[in-house]
Picture 1 (cartoon, rainbow, N blue to C red):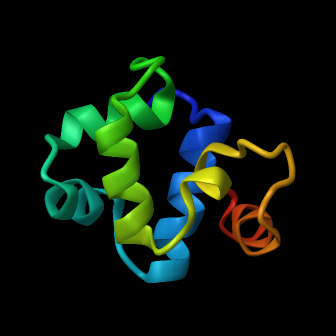
Picture 2: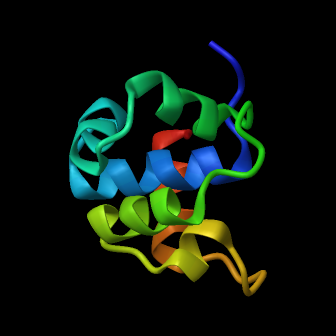
Length: 86
């Protein structure tokens, strides 16, 4: 499996906090599982904004936190990333 990007680690951590798998997340967001994998590994360098909004909403995090737009990682997500080794 390819290495996760920073975005991929935040998605994995948010999934862990919510208690769902990334497969379940993909299903709930309405995207193919391989599309989710490409987003998480960075193969899709610029995922569609609509997809990212759906992912953030499903995970219960802001888009700012998911994309780290402010450059200040969400403390909850940062802790989860460290805990799950995402």
